[in-house]
Length: 372
Ligand code: N6Q
Image 1 (cartoon, rainbow, N blue to C red):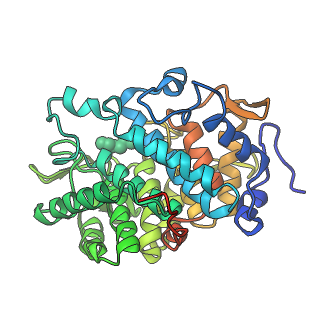
Image 2 (image 1 turned 60 degrees about the horizontal axis):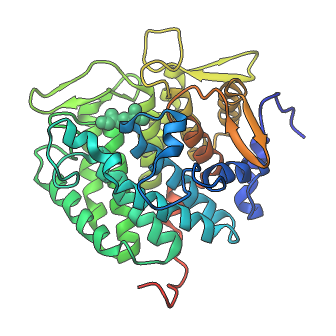
């Protein structure tokens, strides 16, 4: 067996072997228990608009949408990894999707004064995830309960992309983020997968636009954001933005991400502790790691998993997991000291992730007689 650092829960080899073995590691099972087991307070206890689990974790309201989304992407991977867990995983994605529509999740949009309809225009950081969740739910469950909403929202997103003078959609007015767009484009691919449509044709002009305007040519990294009214980019390169985007784009265009991955690693990843650990600086010209939103190492863990880079995955998990003090009590995993606002979500997702391209190949089970 590999030499496992204290505070690590399973070996990297075991995480990468889950799909072949059709079974998840014990700590992933304990993470699923965290998400589903404890009455009233687990995240997926009910489909109602209760958010006790996020209150306990002190997740800010604006972040809950990403929490529901990243849990769901991990659950979709669990569904295609272990056939016995597929019904539970699909059930939890259903609950996550249902919660995603609760006002608590999108009320920031109204409070910020941008309108009372969270999907009508912009807000791609919300509706991109919602659309991807609708699609992944149908893909892993075969249940068509969200199909009409999925169709409606896919059209809204595609029409908006087509109408904009740049390739993509905005988060807030005049705020464009590549990572949120990567979610939206991936959602078009899942829609096409389910319905044989060709919305994904919009992806090529988007990737061209990224190359031309939003990537720093020297490092292959993305600028933090783009502001179309002035045509400016904020001049800081962002590692979490780049890791998230390259991970999702890899599911659509592997060559694009493979082209930039080596430069990304060279620019942002710092291997330390004699090669046992690695951390990620959020931007260039800084010696410290995980600045900004604090999630550069955690999103790079997902990217390393997506790229099949077991060495970097292992080094990053050695950096991330032991200091977060994981405890498994009564078969339920809890992190006592998570280092960012999406910590357990991103570790869960990265541990089980089969690849966005692989998810796109998933085949829905036959619809049950009682589903519409
Ligand atoms: C407008 C939205 C974003 C820039 C994405 C924020 C992501 C979280 C993880 C900080």
